[in-house]
Image (cartoon, rainbow, N blue to C red; front, side, top):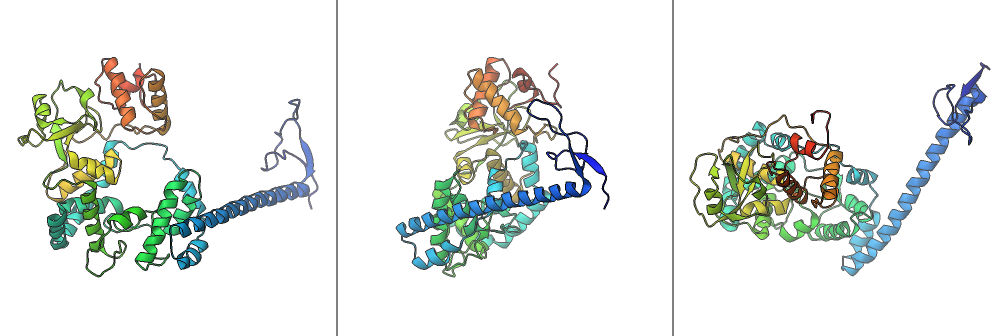
Length: 441
């Protein structure tokens, strides 16, 4: 045994070093220990950390067990079969990874160019066209019955699970129970868990079959349990509704869902347009819906040169990448797509993919790929600045939602800038927000 004396800092838990912690008066303190004692203390520290971790895990499991007991009472009130309550609900396991994923927030937002280019790829277009032809008979029947063209159904399928190539592998019931026992969205996920248990009973499923995303979405079209119970239908005629195993069930359920959400037969989602140089960008956004005559009189034209007609139809103008990017006129069916998923980017990706599947070309004015992705912290600073200046941007959440865009348009208009609601470099500088890649000089 080497018995030389070394100076270490017990607070560091690292290899022996001279730099140490300070006492209450701020004076440096070192602790003289032999090498044997140093490793003993380090070993004991590791054991202590393990003990703390185990105790925390035990406390979490105890809380989860209490929650499951409460969920059993709720399930009895909902008149779920006792065998489901005892044999399924009572055996669900906590999934700590689900809480981690629920709390995780991406550091950077995606630009419109990044979002669309990652989802509308040549491979996804070509594969979707093959599937459109492969399921032509079914999709034609669904179009006749529900009014939804097959290209939209295949586009949703492509964005949700890449045409079924990845349905998710998380245990749905365990995930929903974990989220139902978490404070953040307890009521919502409790309802979804109850719906999932009813679904398991109705379709004679096993818990092992029910796998999907960490948030509980399932099958080829990633339905939440409540949507599954309300809108999923038998598309292959076998008397069952299985969105994992049956592509026909998934496509038919998607058609029924969009129909119930208000899909208007014979109307498209919208199309790309070209805006005149002096266009009033302050009028962009989903909340400003005007007859096509109004937009035509302002100089709005279809990007492909087609004539704009049916002037009574109401539409909104969207500029998801600001005035320098593409512009779109969107109709009522675009709102229906957004009821499936509230993201404007998602809805545009579905719509544009559907167009590409039936032969449309790429955007006439594609978004720039040079625009930097803004961090959530930057957007929070933007929201805070707008609120302080009297432009109500809503909650400070780091997301460029409708309220933030509307507030930004008002700020830009007041400053004599192009009021497109897009946080470009000029706008960020006007708000005294600087980025490493942007110079405000």
